[in-house]
Length: 300
Image (cartoon, rainbow, N blue to C red):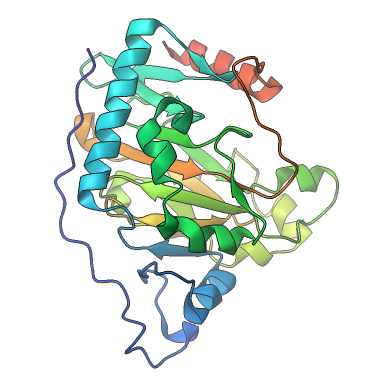
């Protein structure tokens, strides 16, 4: 039986910006601004996202919801360990080892297929403004592509970090600069400071030239910190949107053991042709490639 990960000990999150009393412009806001997600994306929030390529909404998931989601993920992990199932809709499940040497879920695609709780949660009306940011015709694609992906990073993780990259690599091969935003919607479940690793961004590079997209860094190989990078500091329940056209990386934690745990879930919002996966779906080429790498690293 895998160890149950409890809610992290955390300090209180800073207050989100009170837009009703804020008289400035987007130029007056620090990059660390925490916004409140309401029934509509405000003009100021839209301007911040357009200017910098990312935005953070404070504690969109409440503490009891975070606790319930993590408990559900633990129950799913225990079920997978017992059943021996290692894929969902053709996408491999990666079980690594926790600091106590027991199985730990490190990446699971199509998470909502395994969780009634999460399937309902991602469809809650509070996320409707996020969907509309992606596009009025956008839908939650949790049974398309890789679905909702839950990640756990920990000391000794199968994937301890991710080097600098953009999500526009396919366009680079065709000498095309993606014109439309490529939004990544992330939910974060732990208190993450710079020493805890996590997401780093280069604000504004979502509007960079094709030349910069191709050559300012080497995709998935460049690891060095950048003088202009911004660390995305999170509290449990925070929601982030970042444009995948920008340069971003994932850093490892400086801590060890259970203090190094960082958990997140990315929810896909899809606008292209409906293409659901099923139990009969076969793993894609990149699934097979990365699964071989993860097996070599010790995935269970």
